[in-house]
Image (cartoon, rainbow, N blue to C red; front, side):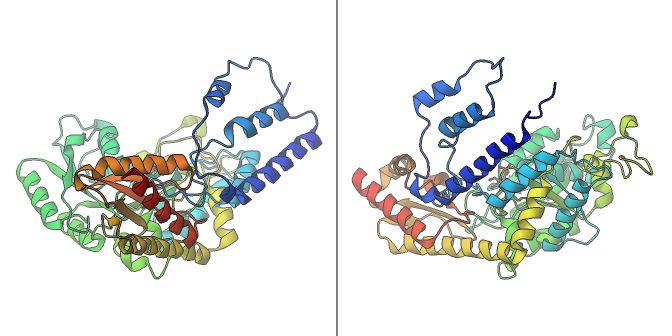
Length: 474
Ligand SMILES: Cc1ncc(COP(=O)(O)O)c(C=O)c1O
């Protein structure tokens, strides 16, 4: 018995029609709603029992087309700017096919997959301005990429062997991020045993950037009280407003204080790919560790996060294990060992790097940079449209690609509830998908733009739709 098809030619024909259908689907996205809810009958149809008997590829594919394909969350649509979700590059769909076909175990071994990942990491090191001997690894997400960076920081700066001893009986480690930092920081403090209460949230200035006087004061107070500060987290592109912390000053402060400087650049770090935008994130190249996603502004399909650190030795030391069943050999399949398994948590790793390698080589980084510039220009244009519309109010300065605004032509007391209703009606209309957040406690609509399919006209439609819905409701 085998899972290989009995008839390879018939199998390939189904595969070809899948590629044809998906290309057709992507080419006609504009003709469909940006999002539609999953109908009750589709939910019911998907609630199937255990398929003990095989149903065949054609039947499953027909079900996929009917029950799965139309009901995704919409991020591939040209008018989707909800949360920070990349639209996906169709070329990576082909890379995923090739990668899954080859199915190499990509932790290392003497084979092509780790060489491809090494190349992708080397490109990222160069683009981010890190030293050529910096170390890096791809992982599943921004959350994971940041967690890995913080794990290296903890290992390098705890002042004791944290892997061996754990944190029990040691002075409590503290670390610092702004109040605008993403939830990954809390998740990481919890997972690394540091504890949420030891993650200090530092207030921000009028541009939502960390206030460094407050940071200095907090570090001083912690030291005086017997805590052990070890790491400062800067954000390049906050999730709420796209604000960029004063990275250069933070790097300076960390060097002076002997603290590890970690930067979460989940999407904002990619501004450095553009010569014109790179000054916005100046200082990122001085980070001890940097995490970012290629599935956000890099447009790779989910999922692909990346961690870089200038401390290659410490990176390996934070994770390396001896594995008698995988001891490196001089020759043979295992020659070179499994280096990527020693740079993160996963042992078995897929061939995600192929998506990055194929897309970035196909387009070139000049085009990737031009796309990021296009998105920033469109975000600024959206902000200008908001400011030119008497019904709308801009809720935060636009630092990069995130525009926070709301419908404000109504009684100020009810604006939070009104905008929540506008948001839901807009999504349900299928005209566009944006999301929301709180800006200084006030409900705000939020468009986070990492979409390579959007045109200026798409943003005109967004503004029109929000005003129309707002007028209908008031
Ligand atoms: C600034 C920032 N950091 C971290 C993350 C987490 O990334 P992921 O969702 O890939 O885990 C996000 C997600 O939007 C983000 O915006």
